[in-house]
Amino acid sequence: MTSLHNKRAIISGGSRGIGLAIAKRLAAEGGSIAILAKTAEPHPKLPGTIYTAAEEIEQAGGKALPIVTDVRDEDQVKAAVSQAAEAFGGLDICINNASAISLTPTGKTEMKRFDLMFAVNVRATFMLSKECLPYLEKGENPHILNMSPPLDMQTKWFAPSVAYTMSKFGMSQCVLGMAGEFRPRGIAVNALWPHSVIATAAISNVLAGNLAFPHCRKPEIMADAAAAILSKDASEFTGQFCIDDVLLSSEGVTDFSGYRVDPDKPLWSDFFVPEGTLEVEPMVMMTGMSI
Image (tube, rainbow, N blue to C red; front, side, top):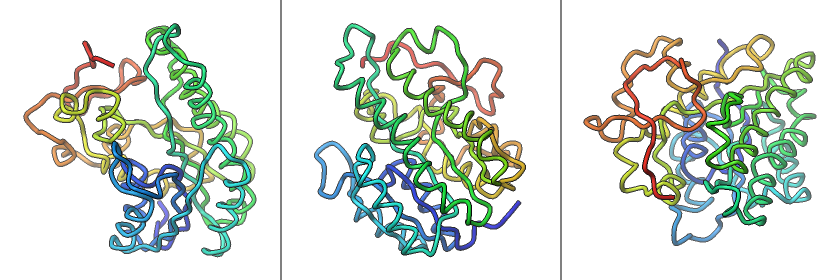
């Protein structure tokens, strides 16, 4: 294990939810974190802005660099990476957290939504990783971490929402390929995915949040799992598809109750969790959801 003290990181979609939780976890170690997001002004359906997120990161003990960025725009991404690297004197960590979701069947998936999911989930992940590469090669114990699922290629994951599944698995294919490509350079590339649904704005807007939230875990479980991954030797731990509680269990964590939104409600398993995954706590599949 290596220290996360004073790490230099860049995170897409870092203004709220899982991305912000990870940023604050790194901040607690004295890290410098650049957060890339579009929300510069308050949004009627989404909490906070990139600037309020930066304030939370600073309060957690880190240095924050908020950069308003559309991760679909190549020029903006290049400029953001350059700005972060110049401000921090380099980069050690790249986290691809930004994601677009539309849980719709083929006939109801508008092509603009299809294009958005592939632009944010696949293209932006590839692009941010690519632009960070020259800096990561010079970084200390460099890691790329994608918030994407294990590549469990079963019909049941594709059939309900083909386009979304394709796009998320595209992020995971980046892990598979880049881990092999970057291993000789000492750069780790891994994926992290939640076992249970996480209480985020996406859940509130897409999965009827008032119904779903009691069955969720808090984003902090993903932040702690991310910290565990990013602390591992980049030359050895790479190409792994990690499930949050399974990973933390392997690190010696035995009590997960503090991560639950409502300890009296059963947890709902997230999409794409392979059968046979260790169940640290009882979970049920999401059924009957109105999307």
